[in-house]
Image (tube, rainbow, N blue to C red; front, side):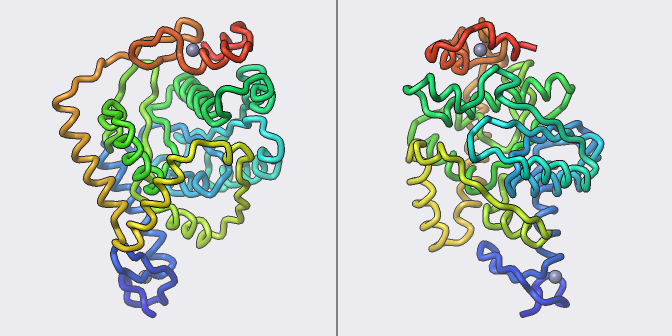
Length: 317
Ligand SMILES: [Zn+2]
Ligand SMILES: [Zn+2]
């Protein structure tokens, strides 16, 4: 089978959503071009400074690779956060991240929950039975990422969400009737607080299988380790994922259509709903919190699980 694009090399990848067979080079170019388009459409300047949160999984490699093709690598800061999950956070991942960063000319820094809030996630979970580990973890990761980016004067925080994640999020927001989240969802970055560094999701139009293929074809040796807390996670996302995969299988390109259509809906919604331009700030940590709150969800969780307030103040940098 010959590549549909260059009509020269042997095809190694089939993209069902455009019914196209591509060779290695044309596939890698296709991904890079789609990421560039996404960034251009979102109005992201090539000379921006961007913080990249990297977990060590394949998406972080893909993100680092495609972004160092768009931005000046010296303007990219990679950040890895060790949550403190026994068996999940491994030293070889950190070593691998260091090597990949160096190869891309990107500076990387490392921090941990222990350093930032005085407790590892495992230690927090021992004290807490009422809130899921993922709720804790997600909230604190976002908070650390945001404050690190702000202190580094980064223009953007880039996350590794792919098309599968994005399509799932659209459906979940609809099922929950979460209009505010739907409005904030679109492709254009929306700034709701001066303290929030604008978030971009460069991979949001790239299928998850494509990120896997991209890292494979680039020779990345990765070993995905599943977080031990994942099985205790709410199952709505898992159900939506199954549903979407069966739709995609019958109608390749369905996920792209869902996200594209909802970008347009979100754009329309933004014209009719005005979001308060500045979120309130948390009385304890000083970080932005949701409308109508005076203590953020993170601090509330720490208070509920009896972890001292003093330890939180370290995040208020
Ligand atoms: Zn080709
Ligand atoms: Zn707070």
